[in-house]
Each structure stands twice: as C-alpha cells, then as structure tokens.
Length: 327
Image 1 (cartoon, one colour):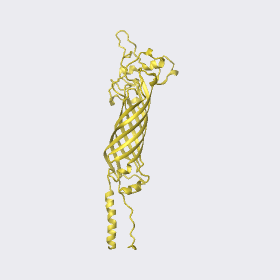
Image 2 (tube, one colour):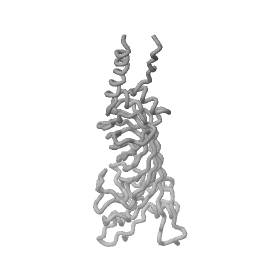
Image 3 (cartoon, helix red, strand yellow):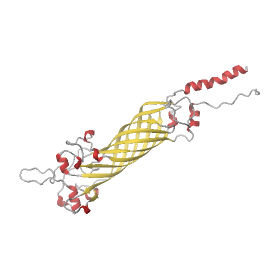
Image 4 (cartoon, one colour):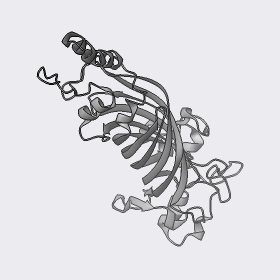
C-alpha cells in the first residue's frame, strides 16, 4: 500500500466521526447516558389548598382560584436524579417547607368571621418518575468541554412527573385572644389540644403531579422550573376538618379559644350563629393539598472527567500517529 493510500484510509474514520458528531441529539445512546446521574438543589414558594384562607368566595376544592397570595410559604429542595432511558428518569427528593393559611385574608364574609389560622413546618420525601416528552439537546462539533458554554450547544428538556411521597407536618395556631394581654399571645401546637375532639397522625402519604422545564447553563449544570400539585391523604394539615366542639369540653382556655375564635355574636333571636357546637368547621369530604413552584439547579455527577468520557462515547478517538519508518 502506498503512503498516499495509507494516509487516505487513516483520515477517513476521522472524517466520518466529525460528521456524526455535529449537532448530535442528546437523546441518543452515546449522549443521554453522559447525564445519567445528577444532584439537584432548589428553592421556591408554596401555596396551601385546604379549609383555611382562600379568595373572595366560597372555597373551591383543588382550584387555583382559591389561592391566598398573602399566605405564600417557602421551600428548600434536595434531590438525586437518575436517567435510565432517553425519555424516562427517576428522582428521589427531600423537601423542607412551610404552609400557611389565615381566614383573616379572605374577603368572603363567613370565612373571614370564622377567624381560624395555621402555619405548618413540613418535611417531605418523594420518589417520582419523569417522562421527558420533548428535548432540544445538541452538542457543538467542538470538543473543548472545559471552557465556556458555546451558543451552538443546546440543552433543553420538557417533562411531566408523578410519584408517591410521605410528609411529616407540625401545625400551629396563633393564640391572640383579645381578652388577655398581648404578652400572652403565642403560637401553639394544634395536634395535642385536639380542637375538634379527634386525634390524628402527623404524617400522611402524598401524590405529586407536575410539569417542568430545564435548560443547560454550562457543561455540568442545568437550571429548571417546576410547578407541582401535591395531594395528601390527610384533612388535618390545617387542623380543620369536621364540626365545632362545645367550648366547655376543653380543659384550658387556650384550646377553647383556638377551637373557635370566631368574631360573630352568638345566636340572638332569629340570627343564625354559624359557629355553634355541631356546626360545620371544615370540609371533611376533601383532603388537603398544596402547590410547589420551584427553581431547581441540576449538577451532572455521572463522570468526574466529563470531556474524556464524552470522547469515549462518541467523540474523536485517539489514533497512533503514522510512523514513516515502520512497516
């Protein structure tokens, strides 16, 4: 074989490799597997969807119309994500967040007069499955992966998710009885005092469902936005579910007040008191729920040397230089 033909055959694999590498879609076996394992960090806002607070009308179950913006809470989020298929991934997460609700913020007359309020500190773990229904993820034909993120690179994912979770909640109500001094006003744990005469567990299963979008901001990092709705199997996250109890059934004034802090007068003549013993305090037919709106940063931890591994997967392979003195 002549030197000219040898050089041509040596260069041919390199040319084919470069053609295949240009703008390769991320969802190929050679590319999506480079991001199989990821760590996620996030923060965002929460909204409670239950019996307390709400908008200017009678409460609407599981409706965005009943959101009370003054009771927005905050959340911190940590997750581990593993992509096991071009269109599927699974995420294990830990979220610490608070939920709030206050009848004083409602413009509906009866809800406002009910005058109940709560806040809750919550810890939730979730295991969810993601379906990546659309992607626009391409690499540039260059292999200088340690530098800036070229505009030719695109890393976008659109996905929906669901799963199962477990939440621990610690709800409190604010004791601000006007008949006592302000120095005695305080937050009180609600579950131990049984404001509706019933005990309940401080944990419940959850089912999250949501939609998200993420895009690349560097070789190793993505930034994403997620909106999720989480249904629970408890109606007591806000400590409100059934009917009012007899205030004399409580053995301390704090519990008695928090069970019924309404500010309408008692029944006089033909006037109906909505807050007497046995009257509806909450809606026991619908369980509590809440919303998350999170900003999430994702770091690729699949390989320590991302550039070298990508070359092994689909980039330019090292070739032994031609030695003119060899046989």
